[in-house]
Amino acid sequence: MAKIEPKRTFLKRHNNIVLLIGVSLLLAGFYGLFYSGQEDQWTMTDNGLLSYPEREGLEYSVINVDDSNPGYVVNTITYTSRETEVDSLLTIPATDDNNSDPVPAVVILPGAGVTKEGEHSLSVLLADMGYASIILDQRNLGAVNVENDIMLFRNGAEPVEFLMVYDALMASDVLRDQPEIDGSKIAMLGSSNGGRFAIIATSIDESISGVIGISTSGYDSDSLDREDVIDQAAYDLYTSIDPDNYVGGIFPRPFVMIHSLNDTIIPYDAAMNTFEKAEEPKSFGTVDGTAHGYTDAMYPYLESGLEDIFA
Image 1: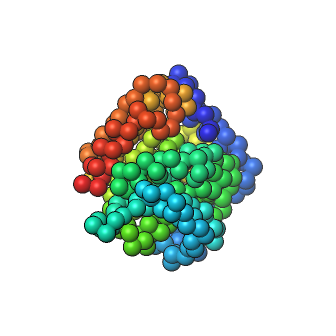
Image 2: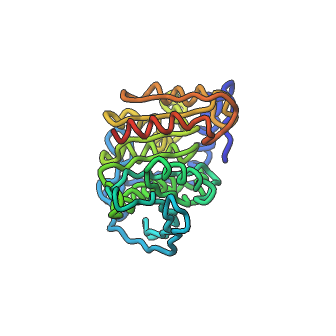
Image 3: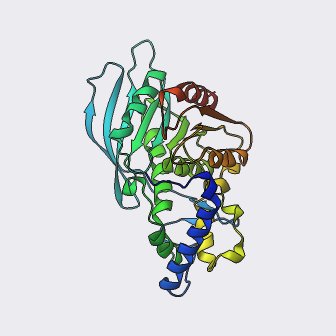
């Protein structure tokens, strides 16, 4: 996973990003971005935030079904998202004849570098709680190429980070298409970088019931002065992918964050900064230790967070 610098250099990190953005834009040439009327149907709001007014029709195929576990069934599913095949694991709790009601479900977005198989234990945990879930192999396994996204954005093309958000939204459509799942109760859950995309996707789609961000934070882009930015397009992209600018749009749905007190990748203070920008209802679970990503100590906060979201 990409490491975020410690607290004492947190603000300095923004200056480095701005410098990188500026250099990349000077190399890129003339600014020629048109936000709307594109074939890809993504737009920017008046506030400079990402929006997907419509999504493409759902196309997916079930590659494999594993029903060897008594507590859950796992489907390996490939679905189409922006002409790309996204691989995923759909886990549905086993039911009996006495209880066949549709169950709530969660879209799980792993951290950078983590595969769907690497996060599957979280799906098993959710199945034990009675929730279905779908885990994605995110594009580039969740890694971000800032320079490439800037170039795409400047030329009116869809940045990969936008596509990662779109993939998460399409995953929610896959869940709703399953007869075992209650389509009115779909949540987003993301770890580290995946948490950022989960927050943005939840803000964009009001039908999402709520979001849980584990070991994640925003970028605090509103701390930047526009005068420090060489090109407006770079600033627009930076602010448009900052979860801090989306958390206010999650209200009135629950917003949940869980973080290790001494997380060695994303500083605790950065997570708290994001949390403070969100509206109620919201909750923050703190656990001791330096772990980055889900740990057993987070279980009570995960359980209560999902209960609040699906209440």
